[in-house]
Length: 164
Image (tube, rainbow, N blue to C red; front, side):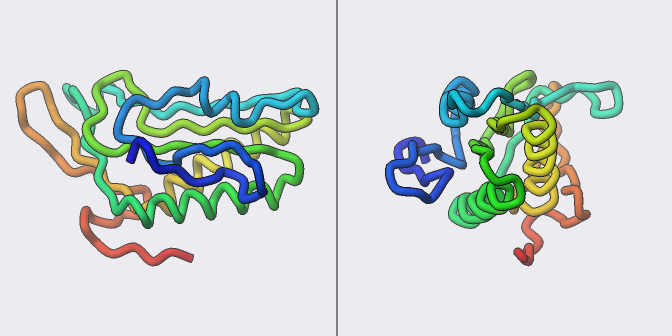
């Protein structure tokens, strides 16, 4: 989806930010989108592929999802957060495809006038993305085996999602 994009903010002249990526996420692009002389706080969240003891010997995670629906739902989340916290700017990107250990699968940047708004809005975007996005994860282990990982709401891979 590299060349097509949507506006993070739906206002005329807004800089374009792609919500879905199939390559590494450039956090500096998201930070640049939310930067402004009137926003003194920037909160950033990166969700990276990990191999914690409870996860096993994960070498990567394969993220799959319906891109158009993912774009639309992440766009709704961004619009909602900008309504809940007036004056914030939000840029978010979720990666699909194979994401190697240590690389980001989701990134969120929020710029606000004050740190509490930036941190609260950033957390809200992350929690809503985890809850609402139609994305499924298949862990790839070093020995070549794979396992589907449940989503936060318990949906199985391929199970329909109802968007609010």
